[in-house]
Image (cartoon, rainbow, N blue to C red):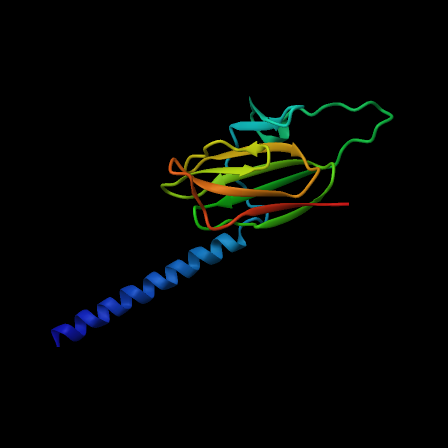
Amino acid sequence: MKYKVIGFILIFIIIGGIALYFQRLNYYKRIGNGNPLPTPSVVVSPNISGSPTPALSGTPESTPTSSASPSMSPRPEKTLKIEVTEIAAGLYESRAKKGTVVHFTISVMSESRTLEFKSEGITTGSISPGSSKTIEFTLEQDMTFTPYEMPAGTVAPYTIKIIATE
């Protein structure tokens, strides 16, 4: 009888753990629908040579933008806000027209893992658990951001793609 009770308790714990896992997994799949995120503290913008240059900023909306002359039409802008962990992201793919200025905010929701996202010529630098960063760039080609767990540099099991459309 004693072993039956222990067996039922173990089965209950295992089923509860599985349910909790799928609940968290579904939560991260639903994110990316405009939920408010923490205010980023750093904006990284590529300079002319293509390498990122960090600059302090308050919010993505207060980031200074270059003013175009009246004869030129302003470049389209797109804001992406994604919550991520070391195993999942709230969004895996997005599309924007070539030439669009992309404001890409990444919020690390993990409790213990620091992440860094890298793409061709762009890196976010380390993003601590519970914090976020925004990078800003002009989309000229498809971008694939790969997350790395820091400091080990282990590649996380997903990527985030931003596809450049005509």
